[in-house]
Length: 309
Image (cartoon, rainbow, N blue to C red; front, side, top):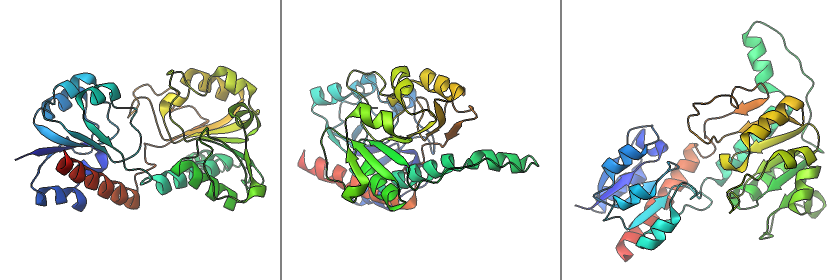
């Protein structure tokens, strides 16, 4: 019987009905360790016999792909493919499918949540009350704020709509110049430097630069608005972590709110423990609705691709 590997943490914790559909299609299902991001050693043990792979955000090396001679399709339960060795997949003719837009609502809602949390100092108040204190720090409202959105794919467009509905002024940068369902009087398109330089809140929803360098570095932070809030629910590689910490220390950034880390869970906690950092554990797409949509799309892509190959 042909086997399909399932590795997303949201799907290994408990069987999902859409994944179990694979059994009815005649496939055997192989799960990685429940609720844990599989490492290279585990993947090398699991991949040799699989023809399909429903993959998550776990790093996949060229060595792992080489150890999977029967592999024909990788189907992501999201859109990011930075964790995959794309050249090796192409060379082998392994098809790569993504669940485009499935997580957009969940990630966009978390982004707005992080904006409001940073503006109103929620972690500071929560920690103080739990310590027996009564902390009060003057907050800011999102209405009338300049929100800069870098990347307007499915998530970025949804963030723009939600932020505009709350009364924010939106500036966007996306080389593809997509349509955004925001009233024209609340939307401005600009180059990257302008958006980064004028925004009180900057939120990242774009791929990492092709040259591998971070988008947000010391120079960008120094040229931005003093006291800006930076939100990252996209990719840890978009920021220079050392530069962000320095900007938080100096006040150039008033807060950094992130759902993504270069290592998950992070072992080096300098950034996560910073008093001006709001950290969540890669939960943007971790909603019942997002998981259902992404899983159904990923399974459909797998079945169709395997039948066609």
